[in-house]
Image (cartoon, rainbow, N blue to C red; front, side, top):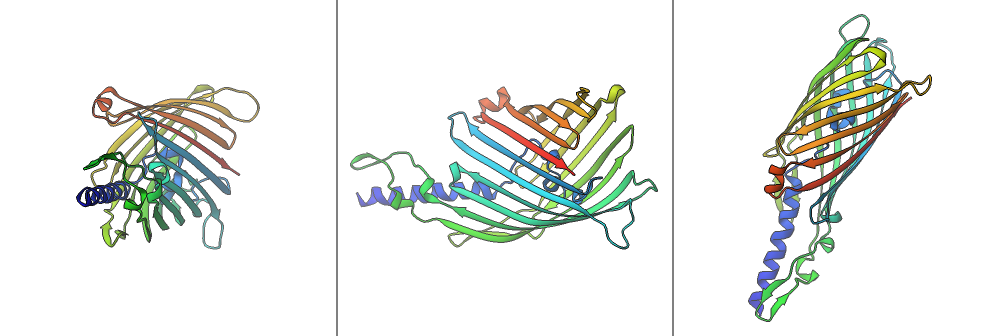
Length: 325
């Protein structure tokens, strides 16, 4: 009987360590990362015509069994600083960002809050073309709550018996500083525009510790690009693409979004319809609505047949909302 109890403790410990390690080994995957400027690239901080910008989003992912596997929520606020020595066509920006990422129905929670700074230098007299550089400093706190972990029944000398909570009573927490940097070239003109940039995350290679076991985060990178063309009648066609590399978690995503000017009022209003793809694993329909300086969108990740056969049948819904003023 003692041998069976020891085996249950070992299995419980290994399960908890696997749960912690799975989140340490990856960052949140957002289908609408291009709608989260401070998450995509620190160099986009303050890169706007208005004085302030508020952005937020929420993503929920469940597996075919219906369990709430992963959820992510974030909010950011950034502004343009006007100060002596900064030309009118340049953009000096500062912003705050915070987000919460959790897995296993909240058993592992990751809280982030940080400061973002960027400077975009105008390369033309009109300011239509800019080269920007940005940096972020994030305080990260991770908490493992083992009381929310549920284990399957184990077989012992007395038959099947579920693992009691006292066998997996140890939780854990970790805090560290995370640094990100980014670079971007952007062009915004009347007829067309676009951007090309890259960002490095975990530049300082922070260490995470659970139960005296250290894990050093690998450096992650994002390469992203976009291009748009304004069509007749106020319509617009936008191409989005990005590549994310983080250890073994690499993926390529891209797609097209068509914005139809629907002329509801004197305020510019558009209905945004598009489709994105992530590698060969997901097809992502995109539906959005823009009204003046406010924009909202919803996406739903459709898992492809090949991914389903590999046991990756995930269902993900993502909502974003932003407003500039």
